[in-house]
Length: 60
Image 1 (cartoon, rainbow, N blue to C red):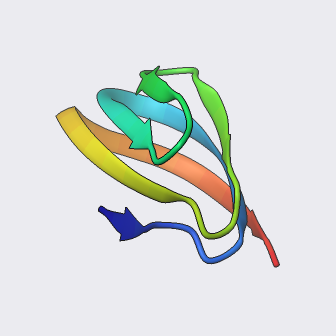
Image 2 (image 1 turned 90 degrees about the horizontal axis):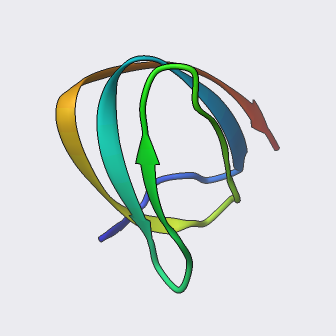
């Protein structure tokens, strides 16, 4: 498990798929078109099923 986000991050999956397990939170299955918000300091485990391409924006 690692801290993936140092600041709030919103992302949109362009292609591929993954499962994201958020510590003390939900398990997210993401794929093309999905929009997610990861809070700063989130500890997560990512299992990538297909090479993941995403665009993201970070808010300090």
